[in-house]
Length: 103
Image (cartoon, rainbow, N blue to C red; front, side):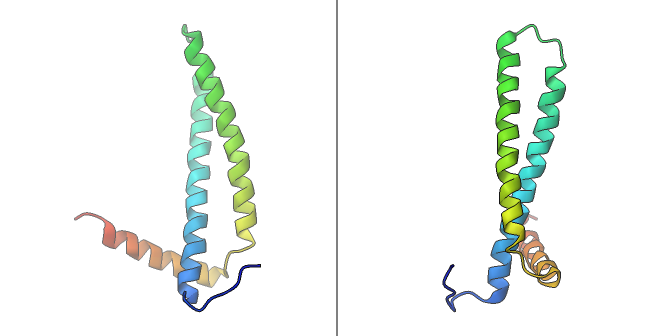
């Protein structure tokens, strides 16, 4: 069990866990896009056997990584704050992102 210190506000703690979960969801989304892409690519008629082997290897690595990230998401779900606090945290995170966008 992690010891709670009084250095971070509840909003800051929420932002850390919500930001982490969002990053994991983004990672999972990219992995799914890659999985689809590699699957499509393997249906192509490649003359280059080495390239086909590399794509098959990428597909296998992506599948393994998806399993890892899905388990991380599952565990993190149990650490998430209430929906109301998640919504508030997402508003703060998006506001910070908007401030960092170049104009």
